[in-house]
Length: 305
Ligand SMILES: [Zn+2]
Image (cartoon, rainbow, N blue to C red; front, side, top):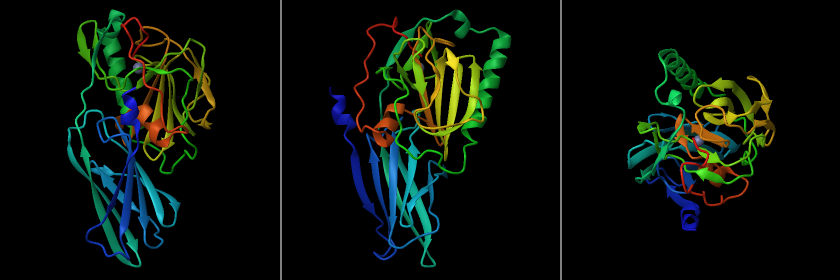
């Protein structure tokens, strides 16, 4: 209900104060809000055609892609743990043999995430030594995956919901498992019965398709330019690492594998290694501009994590 106001798209027009009108790069930003876990779509327009547009944000290169010779875009993720404050996003290009640049400032506002308590099998909270080694190995493998995205954009269509069910667990929630604090919830959960077909949120290349300790049967899709979808807790995986998938293609079925309290789909999105809310992706890059309000579970008996 009250989230409708939050979901309204914020559009800010910023023009470079230093460049002349003839060579300015103009930047328009669109986001649900500028907060941890959100997604900002930046659209750059140049006065004349350019060969390439370079951008940086959060001390790393921000990949850009061309819509036409004078219009470029970049998708910026704001990690769920980023501190509130002002962050520059810089753009530069060569235009008529002159270097032109502009910088916009993102004012990231604070966000308070809820805390929830869950009870799961103790093996997921106090794992034995061999399991700890497995967890460390799998975390390192995923860390490498997030840094090895395709250099070109592999998605072209709008992002789609992977399952029809509504979101039941909110992104970023601080989780207490069996009384012990663990990582914040890095995705959004969708309540769906076991066996529900799962659609690829967008096109890309499958880079992980196997069982992992916490996320159970897991599919990771590289959408290119640093954007990934992770789909967790599947009962059945229908794709293999290396497969190309299209938006809406069935990649598996909903299940309850890994650290869960019941069957559901956990969808997580990484953008430039930032953990962002998939519902922000749907709001900014999705086929329907607004997502139904997430349902806050009445108790921890609802399937989660
Ligand atoms: Zn989850």
